[in-house]
Figure 1 (tube, one colour):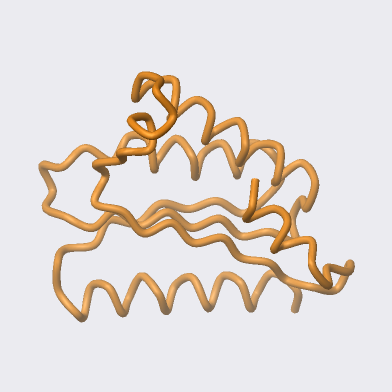
Figure 2: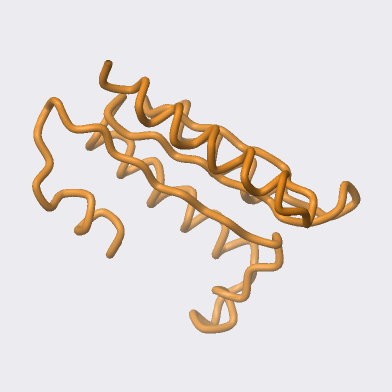
Length: 118
């Protein structure tokens, strides 16, 4: 919810917005909220959908999973899919734990955000 407040600051129809999630896929949010991990993932997905409905195609949501190919990034993939289904530009990228891989994911985010309002 705080991210939405930040995105609303200075927003206008020619503004490109970006939301970037960078995670190892092992969320601990549910522990702080005293709910199950699945409930936490559903809550995050709902918040993403709400934000995307508000900002539409002005918003790019990028979720990057940092880890090896065997790690589970299903919640991040679901968040990116929810963004796309809700009118924003959503994408998921997997990164190995290398500087080149991380740099590539960030470059992709910058390009996608820039293209949003060209």
